Image (cartoon, rainbow, N blue to C red):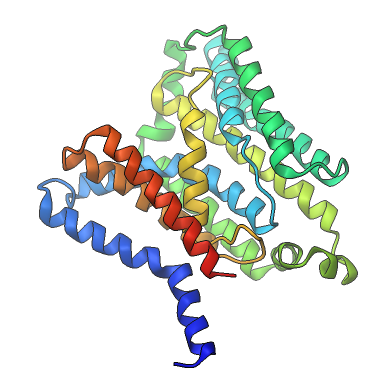
Length: 314
């Protein structure tokens, strides 16, 4: 086999190999368990993946630029708390949506400006805002749970459905379709890929890399804020740490889905499929009666495999 053919096959394995594993895993679960292959359970898996998959859109855009945002968990928590408090206080559903998304926008803007004009590495910047977001969420909530009957008005966002497909899943698919169109069919999408692949070359070609970077971080923050609202709607309450468990699955899904951590390469649609894959792992292990500790080990192994696949893309 020639070197070019070998490189092509390795690239395909890195980008699409997880899909083969997903299919094999789902076929195994369909045989090994009585409930996995039912329509209701499969819809549950997709629904469970939907909220984190929305956050993963923003993370995908950031990683395509060759940057990294680890603040979204704290942003999700803070936005969820403020949005829930707004609804409970009589601000209404639209008021809650505006507050949740607005909080995300503000954090995204801070991240984008610090990385772009402050020239602070994105990991350091978002580590700082992650701590700030977590602290503000804890301070605002006072360590208590925010809940109330008015939060029931948000429940339709995650409990309602169209032809049995949850609204939150429909929303996620619409957002992914929009992101796919922008990334593959528009000039801004092409510029984002170019900036992530080679920032200096993109700048010399007249691409406003700074503007792209700020916009991407703002979008990532807004999506994390929206996810915070949806998480509060799904739980029927909000707590200062409800986004703490999002960092691992979101970043794993982005890398597993084929988005190169060096930037400039990857398909947005694969991120959604990877989110479903991770949700199916948790769901399947529960159906198999696997101990929660073993579940954590499996999830850690998936992350290690995802990073290994990313090495094949280089």
